[in-house]
Length: 353
Image 1 (cartoon, helix red, strand yellow):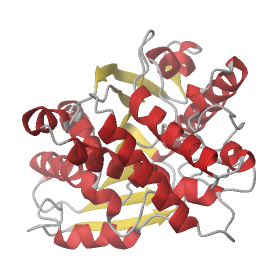
Image 2 (cartoon, rainbow, N blue to C red):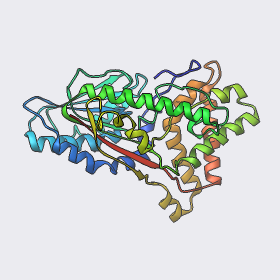
Image 3 (cartoon, rainbow, N blue to C red):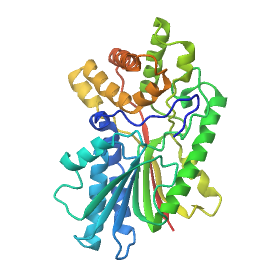
Image 4 (spheres, rainbow, N blue to C red):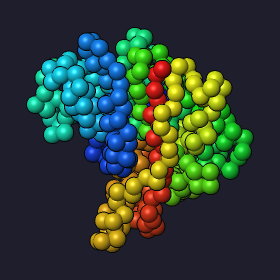
């Protein structure tokens, strides 16, 4: 996924870091499992091997339960010995070694005590074609489509573009999101078999509430602290952009308003925006451990944003030290200002007609 300004959007923090610090994402996935199960029970197939795509797999841990669930249900219907192909996709820079290690060693792996399952991986952005036409029965896509395919503009007043006070900047984000959503849908429609289903889960927003204000705000202020103290210049701060943004139900439905509820042969079978779980707040209320809360949320923020921030910095600088200091400062700020994390999850099930 190309970025402006010569930098690149990074995959998740490697060496298994994302697997260890994505409990919020795992808890979010759980809200969609009932809908995913219904999709697996309703999709049609013949005698062919069954194919499941995991679009934006990262390091695999959070894909194990949904993929295992789909395999179980499909084999209940097709026979326990039916061959199943599972294709994981992510950026070329993704930590695929941790993905394959999880397949072998994770107790929740869909490969555990199973035979006739054939996993593979593709290192390419899902803003390109990934599979031959009409090959996928079920597609799973979680916590990825909030990433823009490119950075349309840089904001002087926030690291997250949708948090900018500038309406022009927010409009540029909305336009890029709309293009990306249409492209993603068009490409996946070509890859799904007739009657195939794709479940996509990503950060959502309500008409009057967006969520993520606290954590994204503290990361932005940690950057400003480093600007005031000298490590970062104004030009560097401007270049540092994490191009993610949530979608509303109106954003999700927009492409489907033009052709009787269809877009690229897809229909929306289910779409809702739900409150996201705060997986750490109960522990904090019980223990009062602000430092522990800070470690948990800093790990999550670092897992998804650190590689992109690193790529925004001059490679001649000690980028590892600068990024390490940034997240140390973030942890200090979170510990000094503990709050409940408010966020929302969009769950969309698409049906290929």
